[in-house]
Amino acid sequence: MIKNYLLPLPLFILFSCAIAPPTYIPELDDGDIAKNKVYVIRDTGSSDKPSMVEVKINEISFGSILATEVAFTDINQSKNTITSTYTNIKNAKCSEASVDFDASPGESYYFIVFNQSPHSRIPACIQMYQTDLANFQKTRRNALTRAESNAGDLAASFVGEVILGLP
Image 1 (cartoon, helix red, strand yellow):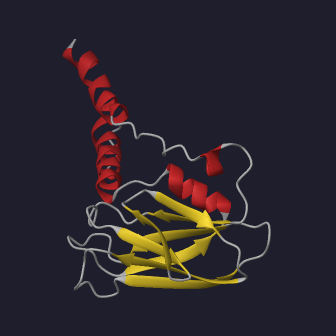
Image 2 (cartoon, rainbow, N blue to C red; image 1 turned 180 degrees about the vertical axis):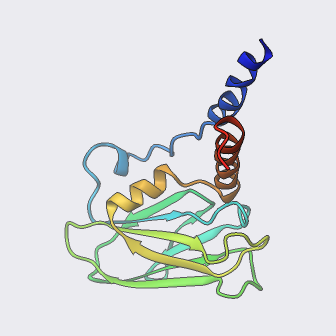
């Protein structure tokens, strides 16, 4: 009798920790993606969660973002430099990352900011890369903090070893 109740318990725990969908952004979520924009998502994990990252294009700030947040702005120049910088961390090595890109009329550009040392207790080298819309949206839907990722690994390990009896 107890065995019948214990089996669903880990599954309930596993699936009750649902992750909220990303914040609604009309420019990304209303069907047609808004053009002539640059979008930046921060996927640095929870290790440096309280640290803000300021995002600039051509030295003009257009947002400060926390983990899993998105900043975006219009672009109208052909040559651009996008920069992401930790705002409240003075001694972190590699506290800034920049990417140069050429913009074409009618196009949008997507960037992901991440932490080079995701398991560090303090912010480490910040990195950024340009990506496509599909990968940007995938990251946006799955922008987990490192703590949530580790919890998922732990739950999967528990299900595999305890419930399914895998080695």
